[in-house]
Image 1 (cartoon, rainbow, N blue to C red):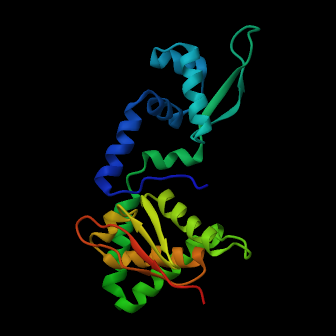
Image 2 (image 1 turned 90 degrees about the horizontal axis):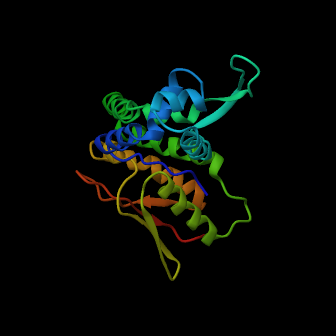
Image 3 (image 1 turned 180 degrees about the horizontal axis):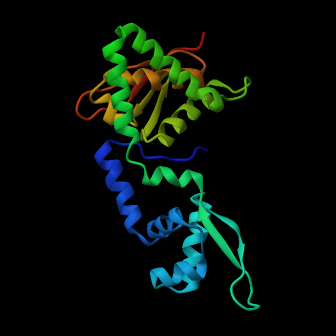
Length: 223
């Protein structure tokens, strides 16, 4: 339903991306990041067969990390070769800047603004994040709760839904914003705003915060 990501903490994210970049598919992305290349050019550089490179490119295309960018005709009258390039979405694999930048922005907000204004801004940011994820007005409570769990999982929350006799709790084994929440617990307000918009009723964060945060959101009963 939603594309999965692994925000995690800074160290885990860097390790995860570096392991991928060290793999054959990661090396292909690294080569395409500088210049578009054909299958044959990639195969020569990586010392692989053309078919092996095509298999890797097929998987990378499926994951929207590379795309065809035209054809190139070699010397002579040979068959033109497809040229592949890095897709814009693939840049996030190389990025290590977002978590520390987010933390620095939060620190600056906390230093400049009163706590109430900072939390209001984070709630509003969560609601804005939910705008393209809103369900149709006719969607029922169960569908909205399921969508909220799916979104939190897509962000890296590893969440489940507990819904007994109309009392619902969304509980995660971890936290998709762990690197920020561990230092600034008010960051949870952004997820609270996001889930409230998706579910359509107020959602209250009761998260476990500290060194290893985990999500817990209580959903208000429908009015």
